[in-house]
Image (cartoon, rainbow, N blue to C red; front, top):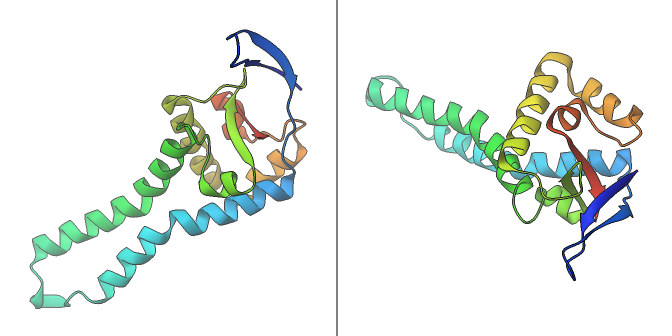
Length: 159
């Protein structure tokens, strides 16, 4: 697949072929990111084990702690990926360590909005279709794009 990327020397766009990471590389990156992104959730769970039960804890405080835990459970992983994929790193630690990155259709860094769309669609796809279907779409697509990549107009490439 050919993309146009900016040449840093003279700011002209030139055509360049990109290599798409293997299906296995994408899975290993996802697994690695799962470990990184769920550390705060594990920490919240550990802290919750030490909270007093029943009457020893005010109902308002318990409600606040439940809200914070639920917020951490859903929002942190989303923001983790959105911020890192739209940053200069162009990907999460899993992608970085495996030498891959997320780019837009023209080969440039994706916007915060593209990263948000990409990750919300990924979460919804996993919830409604299951992880297997999400990976199957990636495995069968020529550019190895998932539904989330197609809708956000992004692609994962090798650095």
